[in-house]
Length: 262
Image: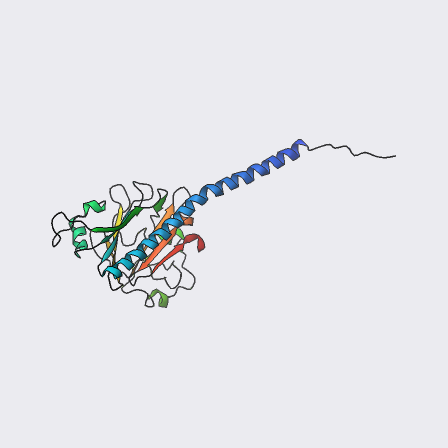
């Protein structure tokens, strides 16, 4: 006798299981896709600012004049996007101008004094701002990697191996060799202000025609340290695990590092 197999279909339990699996996969995919654009903008912002730094150095060499990158980096959740201006220090008095205008917020607040003629302004090469979703990581790169020292960092490497000139303060050795000596304990290690309302993180990177670099805070006080870092995060991602750091030394080196790569 020929037997026929009856198609019984799926049970309710099987159907519910499949639907549940699909729902979980869809939720995971949506979460990943939601974070991806923010991290992409964050990486793009770090690379863009690195390019701005490198461009400013080239302008200083090409014009045989000091060129400065002026930075106003608001706190993690406050105010406007991070802004920057690349200017020529036409009269070599930008430090004095900063000291005379300690509460500046934009380049328009920085009017050069003597020997600049009355009504003068600094020549602007470039200006811009980061995407609104990019903010500083208020505790710095060390907090992003939970203070874990980078592999290979030793005292001999912390001594800079010729990559920078000057002392290093506030170092947890969280950047990989040979950048173990770079300060890593705050969002912007050369800036003044704490990122709270009315006290944005502000600072200046100064490039000399001979290739040397110095870092100053909002009031024009030049840092004695041989290197600096600026640490960024994307809003809405939990922050620290996706942080991007821009490292600069006073010999002109610029590098970017990701906390997730550690």
